[in-house]
Amino acid sequence: MVASELLTPDGDPNERFTAAVEMAVGDFLVIEHLDLAAPYDTPLVAAAMMANAADRLAGDCGAIVIPRSAFVLEGGGLLEEAGALLEGREFSDRLRLIDTALAAFEDASRRVRDRLRGRRADRWEEEPDEETDEDGWQLSARTAAVLRVALEDLSQQAWEEVAALDDEPLAPGAAGLFAKLPPLTFRRPRVWRKQMARAFDDLHGDLDAGRTPYPTCTGEEMALHLAIRKAKTLLRDRPNRIAGLVDELPVSEDDFDWETCLDLLFEDHDVLMLFDRSLDGLEDADSEISQKLGTVNLNPDHWFEPFDEGRDPERGFRHE
Image 1: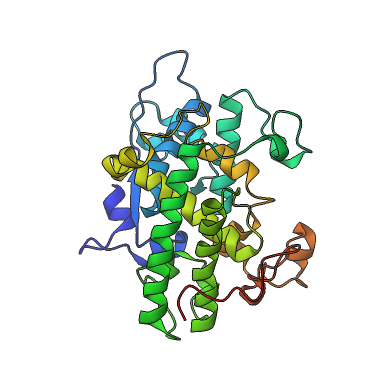
Image 2: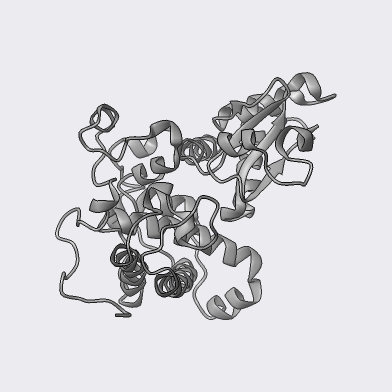
């Protein structure tokens, strides 16, 4: 049923599926059945499991596919309610899709996890209290070490692509690091890509200097989002590499708490909304939607303008 709805006879994503999700070129996760024992058989727990499963696939999971309840013999109602919690949309009378590239999915996943942890779902929209005040929080040594390696790997990949691509625009469905950015960046020139590569270097430099890597511009926000996703992938796919890296470092209860990193390292997650095709035009600061949401510096022309004091404008590039 799922294959016939989403794929061509050759096994490629069909036009309808490609139009429905942001990253149809990646893998997609099909959840046809979920068996949870009481008292855990709730939509909230089911939604958290779906979100965690998508995280384990990291940036390669383009969508979660859930059969509609009428086409599932058992547990369909639970699946459909969980899908609604994660901002799933009706794809057909038989399938619901959750687009994992959208900011709506990221926000919904965090709300679900917050509720499971007994925290208020709107916590990040309020003034921080004593327990979440950034002044009293810092990355654990092990978290910082893995994030540093992720930034180092992404920097190397970015500079290799800068050299290979030059000013060549990216086509939809292209592979590589720059293809993981919002599509409105695909036609950016070499000098812009160099600035994006430097964003990974600057955050890496913060960690090298023992500083918390708070993004200083929109480009660094995107770089840090990609680095956190990369760090999750390293933990899952390269356990021996990570073990050798962190074994001598002190253990903390905050180790690899990426949700807290997402909460406290960023002022907001507006840059992720650029993946949402339903918000086309958001990058225009004068547009109605941008004015309504209060977004700033989302146009790629302004990604590297500092929010506040910023970094040394004379610092140059790692590679010229």
